[in-house]
Structures are given as structure tokens and as C-alpha cells.
Amino acid sequence: MKSTIRIGSGAGTSDDRMTPALELARRGGLDYLVFECLAERTVARENQDRLRDPERGYTPSLPERLAMVLPACVEEDVRIVSNMGAANPRGGARAARRVARDLGLGEIPVAVVEGDDVTEALRARPELRLMENGEPLESILPRVVSANAYLGADVIAEALSTGARIVLTGRVADPSLFLAPMLHEFGWRLDDLDRVAAGTVAGHLLECTGAVTGGCFGWPGIKDVPDLAGLGYPFADVTSGGGVTIGKTPGSGGRLDVMTCTEQLIYEMHDPTDYITPDCRLDITGLSMEQVAADRVRIAGARARPRTGTYKVTVGHTDGWIGEGEVSYGGIDAVARARWAAEVVRERLRRRGFVYEDWRVDLIGLSSLHGDPGDRPEPYEVRLRLAARARDRGAAHAVGFETRAMHMHGPGGAGGACEPRVREVLAVKSVLLPKELVSPRVTVEGAA
Amino acid sequence: MTTRVHDLAHCRAGDKGNTSNVSVILYSAADWDFVREHLTEARVLHAYRHVARGPVTRHEIRNLKAFNFVIENALGGGVTISLAQDIHGKSLSNVMLAVELPAREEGEGS
Image (cartoon, rainbow over all chains, first blue to last red):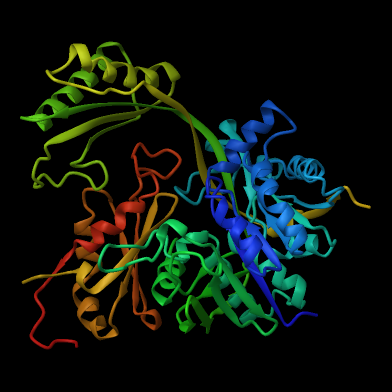
């Protein structure tokens, strides 16, 4: 048994940058490389993909990401763990095997974690309460397109025990992707609470790749980040006793210190004594960080209570359409003309009989990010952005259509309108489902 | 002279559903009592009133010289249905950095 393993982070979102993952695979001295590619809404989107084509529904960038790192991972003996299976882990596994074949790497077995899709279990439980508003699940059931439980590290560790080079999952909790190799290598059990806490913290720090190595951090003159353009991705060295030290690709840009780690640790956390994952309830209020070398931070003192009896389930449902339009105003009275245009568009939409559930006026350059306190100086130019949500596509499309018409039929001096934008809304809600109603399971595509 | 949060701390915003959390991480532990006294839930909710309905809950993480503000009803209904440009509220940490606190007494805290 190894006494220390090194786990790298190769993606923190489906759109994450790619080349730093290759640098980490080549130069990082890794044992495992994790790709985390699912956001709250992406499984719902991938489910719709699978409905259109049963072979699809995995993360669209899966072939490209794997094709880039697989040769290095085979040469350096790095195993890959990823939730890029999304709504179709088996389809993703077949795609991964095609990539390996095309690269001349032969037949690579891929372990598949399934059971996160709990759509049928939920249809039988319409009385479950939505965590967001307390309404019964029944209120959205007719519009549900997906329901996926956040599975934990235990089933991913089971997949690793098959020996497959690649493990693909659907919806799992992000830190669990990182904790799983520790359970597998060191034989930790989920009631080894101090170790599970340490591993969960490591996973939470790594799950957004460059956001712990100086991304999403820099501020000129105050929080400088060397060679931000060459930002490197992180890894964790984890010992069998639960020691954790965070590092990053040797020679890469960015910075890794107590400040960057603290920002990332608290990111997306609510109660610091009770961060709930499928594996434990984490408490960071006794945690300490220490810079032990350049770009190396040691983490200690994480605690945990035993996991809850439920899985959190993300329920995706259709919820109408969003339409958007933009047009710009500059010079004298730019803001007044933009505000007038917003009123004209809204009135034209009203006279055409369209109804909207939500309506938003942004003056980009003045109030689009943090609202309008009414006391800010007016900028030289503003870009008017109008957005609205409607039940039907036509009403949503009309928002951008009427905004574009400000060129010719609105207040004077409008310029640079964009094409009308319209998209279907895939909303998500959450419910808690008792664990005994969920059956996580492992299969292997291409087993010898 | 007032003090801004920006002078004493760095911040990052995260999202879960329709809730934003904004960390306030002190550069110096010596400022803990001053920030704890003045950067109250009410002051933070006031600063975010054009963005969020609240409520605001403040958590203390003294071992990391940090506070975590959980700001509810802050993200236009949530990432998936929000009409905002910044659907995740990633830029909301900058509202916190601009919050003004009372002037420091000479030698206070440090």
C-alpha cells in the first residue's frame, strides 16, 4: 500500500481551460487526475441531449479532454476519475474507449458509476418537499426532465477497485470525486471521520482547479498573481493518516498560499460547522493552514460528523423561455435615452399582447451587476440590456426583436444592437431522498 | 476617514440556488473585534438592498480570521432562471469590499 498519493484537478466546470490539465498530467507526478464537469443545471441539459440521441448525454467536451490527456496518463500511470458521464455514463464510457482506440492505446476498460438517476423513484414520491420553497414535488412533476442524486465517494471507490484506468460517473458530489481515491488506496471507511473530513476538505479546495492557485483572486497592487496567464492547476498530497498538503504544477504560473486557500475553502459554503456532502458533515471551525514551502499549503484540523440518511437530489424542469436584447447609447443624456428606450420596448410588447413573468432592465456601465442605488455618477456611454421570462417562445423572442428596432424606431442615436437572443429555461429544484431508495452501482465497459 | 472592508479584508462570492455567500477574510487577526462589531448582518443587508432581499446570516470562522455572510434571495431566483448577466453573482464580493465602516480610533486593534 502506498503511504502517500497525489490527486490532481484537471477541470472544475464543463467549460474549464484544457491545457493546464495536460501540464499537470505530464509534470505533476500524479497518481490520479480528476475532472469535475457538472454544474447544477448541466445534468438537466445533458438529459435533454440524451432524449434527442440515446448515445449522447455525456459531457460534450469529454472526447476532447480525454484525447488530450490520455497518452500522458497512460505513460505516467495516472488514473482518471470524472463526472463527465453526466446523464449517460455508459455512453460516455463508450466514447472514452473510442478515443483510446483512435489514439492507438488499445482497449481500455472504463468503470461506470450509475444509479444517480432517480427520476422513477421521485415520481412515486410526489409528496416530497422542495427545499427552495417548501412546495410539494407534485407542483413541478409534469415538467420534470431529470432528477439526479448527488452520490458519494463510496461507490466511486468501488469503481476504482475494478482496476479500470478511467472511472466515469453521473451526478456525484464534487469533493467525493477526490475522496474516492483515498478510500480506495488507504482502505478508509466513512466512519473514519477525521480522515474523511481531511479528504473532503482536500476535494473542496481542488474542485475549482485554478480558483485555488491564484485564479478569481488577483487585484492589482494588493493581491498580485505572478504569471496569471500561465496559471497552473492544483494537486493534493494525501497521506494514509489523513495529512493533506496542497500544491500546483511545478513551474506553472499563479500562486498558492493561505490567502488563496482560504478564499476557496469558504467558497459556496454556508454554515462552516455543517457543510453537508454525501460522505460526511464537515466542520472547518478547527481547521488550520500553514505555508510549508513555496506554493505548498498544509491543511490540518478538519472535523466531521457522520453523513446524513439522505441524498440531495437536483430536479431539473422546464420553466418557460428567456429572451434578451441589447443596444447602446453614448454621449449627452445617454442614460436618459436608454431609460426611454426601455419604456418604449416594454410598451410595444404590452400592446402586442405579450405577458412576462419577470422583466429586467440593465444599464451596463451603471447598474447591471449590483443594482441601482440612484446615486452613482452617469457614465459617458451605457448599453441597455432588456431580459424577460415568458411562458412561450414567441413572447421571449419579441424582447430582443423590439430592442433591436431601437436602431430605427426608438430615441435618437442608438447603436450596436445585437441579434435577438432566446433560450429555453431549465430550472432546478432540490429534494432530499432517503438513501435506501437509491441504488448506486458499478459496471465496467470493456471488461476483459 | 471611514474604513472600507477593502482596506482590511479580501472577499469571494459563491452561489447555491438563490443564495449568495460572501467571505470576508481579514489580512490581520488584530482587526477581528473591530470588524465583528461593525460589519453586522444589518449593515451587510443594507449594502446589498438593491440586489438581495435577505435575510443575511453571519458565520464566524475565527481560526481562519474570516466571516462568512450568507445572503438569501440574492440571485434573481437562482442561476437557472435568473435574468441577470452575472447569474452566479460572482461579482457580488465587490459590494462587500465597498462597505464603509466607522473611522478607526488611533492605534485601535493593531
